[in-house]
Amino acid sequence: MRAYKIERHADRVTPSRLALRAMLKSQPGFTLIELMVTVIIIGILAAIAYPSYTQYVLRANRAEARAILLESVQFLEQNYTTANRYDQDSTGTAITLPYLTSPKAGTAKYNITAAYGTAPAQSFTLSAAPAGVMTGDACGTYTLDNTGIQGNSSGTIAECWGK
Image 1 (cartoon, one colour):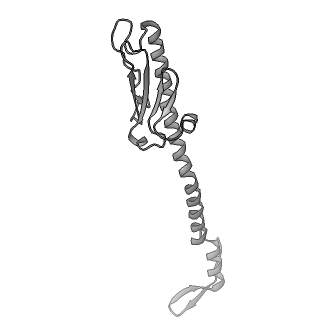
Image 2 (cartoon, rainbow, N blue to C red; image 1 turned 90 degrees about the vertical axis):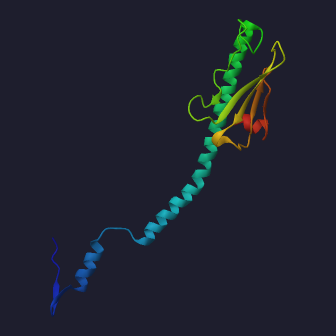
Image 3 (cartoon, rainbow, N blue to C red; image 1 turned 180 degrees about the horizontal axis):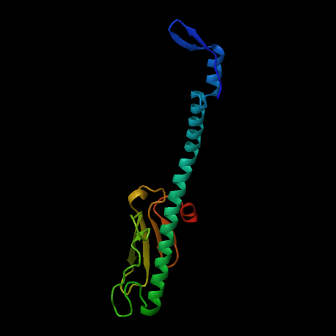
C-alpha cells in the first residue's frame, strides 16, 4: 500500500500535488478520445461489412430457390418416365410438386409453381416467384422448363443463374 503525504489546512484534508498526480496516473480506464476512436473504427467496419452480408444472404436465398427448381425438374422427369406426361402419375392422379416454397421449411422466400402444356402434358414450366423478404429481388421470378431453358423476369440470366 502506498503512503501519500497529506497536508492539513484548517479543518479540511487535501492531498499534495504529488500524491494527486500519483493517484490519477494509477487509475485505469479509457479516455473519451480512445473510446470515440474505437466507436468510429467499429462504425467503418460495419458500414463495409453490412452491405456485403446482405448481398450474401440474397445470393444464398436465390441459390436455394434454384436448387429447389432443379430438384422439382428431377421429380417431374422421373414421373414422366412412368406416366409419359408431367401433370399426372401412371394411375391418372394429378401430381403436386414435392416443395412449393423455398426454403423447404420456414418462412417462404420464393413460391414454386408449375404450369403444364396442353393435354397430354408433354411440357412444363416451373416458376419461383419472390415472396416475403425477397419481394423486389433484382432477379425477379426464376423460370425453368422441360428443355432446360433458364429464365428470370428481370436481370440477366448469366448474373441471376450464375451466382
